[in-house]
Length: 271
Image 1 (cartoon, rainbow, N blue to C red):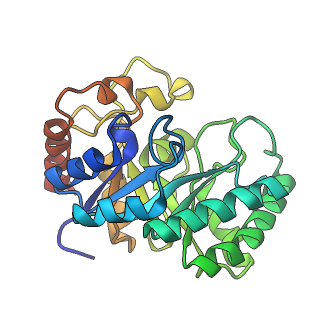
Image 2: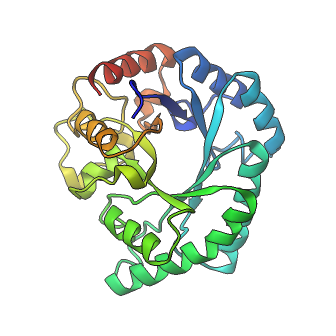
């Protein structure tokens, strides 16, 4: 385990910024890595920015591209999903990204125990050769919402291991979703990336927490980020903590660098 944690930024910290300004923000706050997204209208990747342009801009700013976030509904494996996975993995390779985040179905379908396992295994087996051919790691991200078809990290780990795919897949541990799911276990040695965000609104019941409540982590955080991060590091995780706040209050900050720097300093002092 490294002496101090490293930090990264997901483009969701400031989704209106161009790639160049986003990578500049990473450099300004001392974030060593970045995650780009394929769900930001008018921005890379949806605006047609070539992958090699992203690679060059990131390199110019001295930023490592950790992942593309994300292949949605990955555990609903169809010909359409296979085509999406092939395109995103190719983009990740050409952009110099190390991994592709995999987000499960989250509309209330596919939640039955037998169906969950079957669908997950089929998706992992289908994804494995696509990722392997392009040198990309798959990062499985269970979501804590009751509507999600994959809430349990243990279920994800067991399915990965049962199919002999531990060399190809790791978990995304999202501190918000870990709290919402109520799953006690953390799997540091099987975690490939950690998404961090905080919640400081004490008036919202657990079952009503949504992405819009996710802010930067500070002293008012109620979801236990510090404890989670300490446990992950003690359990073998030695990768970056990537900021992924969805709250409009964060997206509207006039000086995101100052707010991020405060959060980074707080976390670095306590983890």
